[in-house]
Image 1 (cartoon, rainbow, N blue to C red):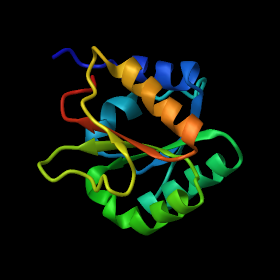
Image 2: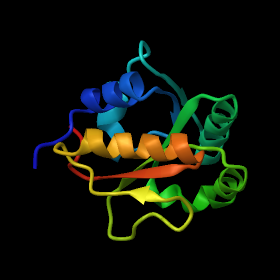
Image 3: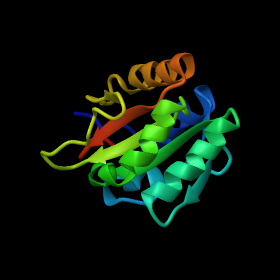
Length: 149
């Protein structure tokens, strides 16, 4: 499987689809994305924990801009209660979640897109963006080991 170039991922997501604000606690699995972040096309605010990252992104989303949170799937449980606020008040957030083990993130909280690869990443990102934009609801993009390069 050919990997998705992280720079192409950001370019399409930020420039073409207009997702410009992100926050998160860096994780090893998303390192390719962190390594090529470009302040010309996006804003990234590092956070001390995922709850803070989600609160920052929620504030941006409430102002009408597209926002996202980057995190490891194992921390989804930590932000479960805050996500419920986003769901109840329709505060749309793009969750970019790295999954590296057999136990997957709790998809029952936020609808998830899985199966991302180089042959379909633009199509999947467009579908996620359409869902967020049209429904005003959060969406989770699950990235697994070996997908990004």
